[in-house]
Length: 128
Image 1 (cartoon, helix red, strand yellow):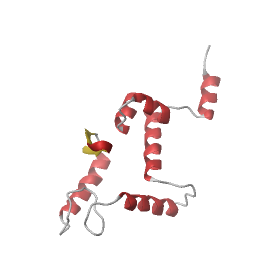
Image 2: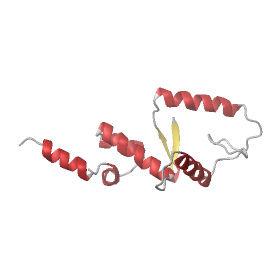
Image 3: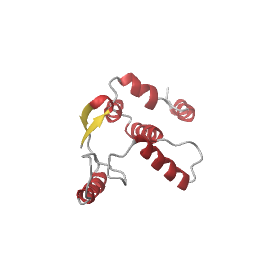
Image 4: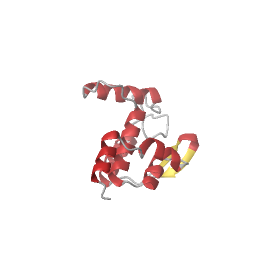
């Protein structure tokens, strides 16, 4: 899928089939909407581009429904997704590409750091 990143930077990222299916289903439903004033993928109930504030409110609403007491923002979801991606793949370059970072040091700083428990486990499991 082609995406527009921060700073008007265009990029392409692949999606798993299950995500592509959901997006295609949504796109087909969106095509049937009348009087839409934008070509944005996600639109509000007012048929215009969804705002950043709307996305923040959606995230807060579903976090509350899930009984999550810590503050949750769209950026929290981004960090969580990228952290899980890196932990599953241990591929710093792919994590950098997915994040859209220009510099790999940014990716290393935020997503490739090792937590205290993981660090202990690595030390204990290391063979000399």
